[in-house]
Length: 295
Image (cartoon, rainbow, N blue to C red):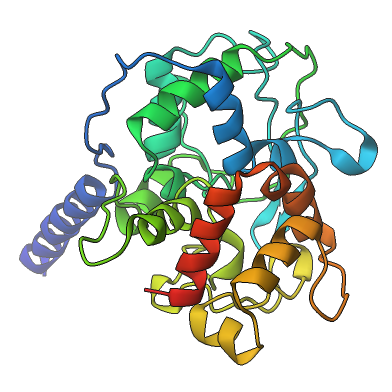
């Protein structure tokens, strides 16, 4: 009996150690070239591509730009987008470019703080080195707002940050966008935007029980998404079945109205106003091309 108990204990230690090794191993992706020359003006555009203003500004309460957004209500709790202005204490003004890059690429902040996937680093990891360098420069050039955003309202066990390392080991693959050789440059730009900085799938793709995007259902829409809202499908088959074409899709994404004159309100309305209306015509055409053609 003692021998059996000893064997069970040893097996438990081995299995537990193996699980700890797998779930707690560091997350690293491809190295970035952070020596590139930064362009603040271009970084401000990348900020609009990435939806930073819409998410990190409390628009409904006239909050200061990038000083912290309204809570994102999810089944796991309420996640509050933090202050990302250049303020050294309330914001990210003390961050180095390397720290900023790691946050965007693997969801890990200074001092090894693991971020929740409500921050879509699983999309931002696809961003180019130049976009990361430019965006950092633009962030450091923002007006500092010395007001810290409220903390997340997340209960046990989801408030255990170290658990996010296990989540990443299960669901995150740090990588850069790889264009498809058999697709046009316009399609590839649209694919980069939709899956990278614009993170369309973060809202329009169903998630599994652990909160990871189900990439087998990319853009298929979500019932009971953020805040319980219905998020419509935007995959190519669904868009075409609803009669969308390039012109009507671009008009809706930049004007906020569907062809039937329904309003794109709520969170999508904020995305239209604070992000999509700032895009270049070429990027809007690229996004429409990709969405209507699909993978």
